[in-house]
Amino acid sequence: MAWLHTWVGLLVGWVLFFVFVTGSAGYMNYEITRWMQPELPLPKQLVEVEPAQVLGFAFDRLEQVAPNARMWSVTLPHRAVAQRTDREAAIAWEDMPRPGQERGRRGNEGFDPVTGAPDQPVEARATGAGWELYEMHYALHYINYDVAYRIVGVCTMFMLLAIISGIITHKKIFKDFFTFRPGKGQRSWLDAHNLVSVMALPFFLMITYSGLVFFTFQYMPTVKDALYGSSEKQLRQLYDELFQRDPVDKAFEPVTRAKASVPQMVATAQAAWGDLPVATVMLRHPAEEGAYVEIIGDSSRLLNRGFPPKLKFNAETGEPMPVEDKNNASLHTRNVLLALHEGHFAGWWLRWLYFLSGVLGCAMIGTGLVLWTVKRRNNHLAKHGGKPGFGHRLVEVLNVGTIVGLPVAVAAYFWANRLLPVEMADRADWEIHCLFAVWGWMFIYAALRPLKRAWLESLYIAAAAFGLIPLLNFLTTDKHLGVTLPYGDWVLAGFDLTMWGFAAAFAYMAYKLKQRWLKQEAAA
Image 1 (cartoon, rainbow, N blue to C red):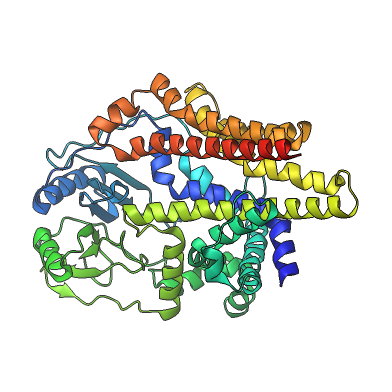
Image 2 (cartoon, one colour; image 1 turned 180 degrees about the vertical axis):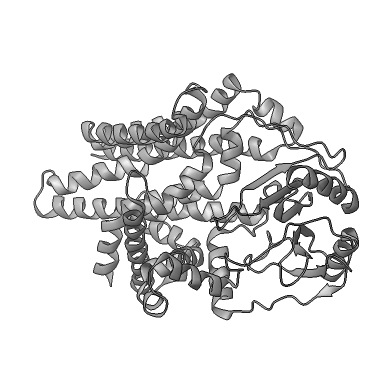
């Protein structure tokens, strides 16, 4: 088990470190995207508005922009404790499909719930934003998508093996949690690896296993292919039955304004759900069933987001209608696992716990990789003397270039967002090119410098790269800490403050390493 733990961890460690860094950053997709589009206005101070007023404005506007639609949707505004789950008032629609088409043209727009005036679109800079980082943690980059998620899948399975074999190998798990002996070389790295591994062990098991569940049909396609087939039409039948959604050929009539009181339907639903707010009001008119209004509850804080609470009412009479029971135990289980992986349900404190657990995952992988080199360097010196061979040197360079170089590259991604010309062609792509170019240069730098100098200087670069981001933001935009802190926009302010936190962490690591090596040189 110790052999298995060591080698499966080493073989995929650098890919897993990339997955954890980009996945942890991608978890803050909303916050990063807000920061990377400084042209967007600060969030509105939402005021309490009666649903009847919001719905009146929404239906008036829908009659103007979508008079021939097979679906109308109204999102009711809501201010949550965590800004990430705030909802602005908005409308959406889908036009009737044209002959020969399965779907109609879709549209949406926001509006002021107090005045009913449509929101004026703000042209923000082109950017990969937080979504690119999120996508890279399972689809990598510059690689065919089908190949990429299979590579990540294999690495994820190896990580699951590493975690389980690690638990067996380090059976004194609670003792390891309370044991750390600094300044002991290889022993200290092992203690640090055990400590961070145990600290968030439930998170690591959950995030690894649930990551595999995301691509169930891709990783294990045989059953679905045997039962349904592999053509696009057969796959659509599978998903229609699995998610119990309307088939694309179902006939609909154009939607018109409901004759019954929709605000009364909303009040009925709100009374039935208590503290769970109403999120969306949808209008449809199936040709064989008649027009209905569907009231959908807010699922942003639910573990099973795929099945939010719903109530249906007859659009003509306002009478309640039966809601189709979509109880499916396997689908419920899958949805809960995916919700645990994505963490969208979490409040602000749990979101920070998720993020810090992701950072601990980076530390677990990083300390494991360093431990491999330290252990083998000590064994080589004890048996043979002199410097280890090419393979050992390669692993050391990969460690420096990945463990420190990748965070520097992510910082460069944020620098590129502020420094690249706003009107630049393919600007979002060039932000990513800058990330990988800087990462490549960090590998080259680590290869050209002595090992200890490479570690220290790379850490200094990381501290400067993150620490100067708030200053760069101050010099290039009007959404800096001097504005966001007084306004109370903790999404933007939190981003800048977090950059300083990372800078302090890298500076501290550089300081501790330097002090350790100076003591070793003095003792020698």
